[in-house]
Image (cartoon, rainbow, N blue to C red):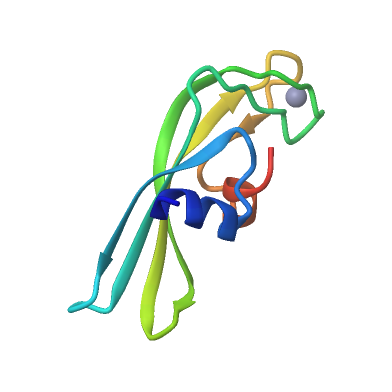
Length: 105
Ligand SMILES: [Zn+2]
């Protein structure tokens, strides 16, 4: 099993996203995991729940995760920015928390 697959299972990443890369630096005691979403994936509006809103832009975000044994762990994700076609609601990087980025819509 590749490390990206292992982290994907361990983090419980949903089917629309995947672990694109991971970098483990024993000297710096640091683990970095890069999460991305699949091309063409659409997301639901957080306001009115309209499904299938297209992504018009992305923003990169980093979260500190629980330590991986004695190593600091960081998750990085290209987060989707959408504008709802029905209500104009937006989903942007400032509203997206780690849980949503990994497991949510
Ligand atoms: Zn909406």
